[in-house]
Length: 336
Image 1: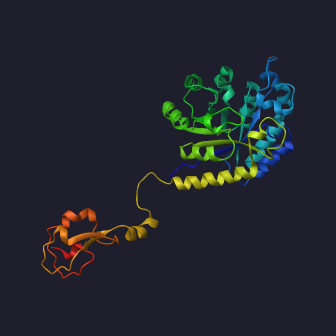
Image 2 (image 1 turned 180 degrees about the vertical axis):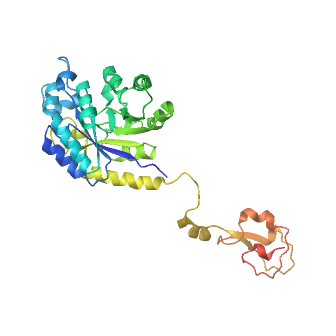
Image 3 (image 1 turned 90 degrees about the vertical axis):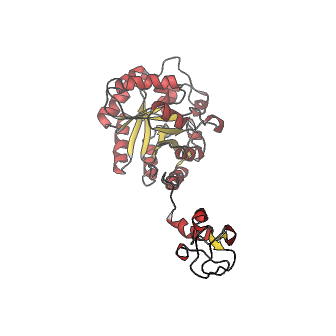
């Protein structure tokens, strides 16, 4: 059977710095079937230099600088602790990406996150990678903006102290990501190259890319969610609204059922149709008892409840032991 996909609702900064909105998102997702809800935590003073600048898509946030935008969209550590407790109440994994060592230490030591999610932008942050290499937790590594060499270098550091359970997420770090840039074939490629399970972190619009990724074997799906795409902020426009996200989860679960098993067999529902749709060996003339069957005596017609046409060589040359009318099924117990 197709393994159940681990689905992550990425909130990111889409709470707009509001603890109330963050809680509202969790509550709206509580019965959706989502496996994890993910946030982001950063200390802007530790993340941004004076030379840092806004990406083009972030300019819609209304902030004058990326540091200002980050501060505006941050929740406190106490907020994150409370959100983790709320997720636990609803039996949903609380995940959070850390963008600096202070945030990482808090998430590991105070909240005890079940999985460390490394965002694409931190794949070359050697201090964070080295710290994670010493922590015995599962890892999800996003690979946006990366080449194969970047992923290899990061994995070498992460596995330095002991081998980790790592899942790689194919990702295109554009907001929104356009269809011609998604390259979903890379899901199978990175799984093969690194011999690690692979998933997909989606920034495209709509559910199609996620569904295609699951059909391509993605073990994890991560998708940004928002209460409204009309909210002001950097990620809302490229995110999926909650109700649409819930519908996508249902579609993924249905797709998993469709994927079924990898054994080619006749399903129970096909067996009745098989009888109707396949052909059997039939008589072309009235056959008298004792006739030695030749090819001219036989043809193939429906239904498929008699002798299969594939067994014609075993029928030719046999003697028929009953009288049989034209256009009737040949049965093996009629032959000697």
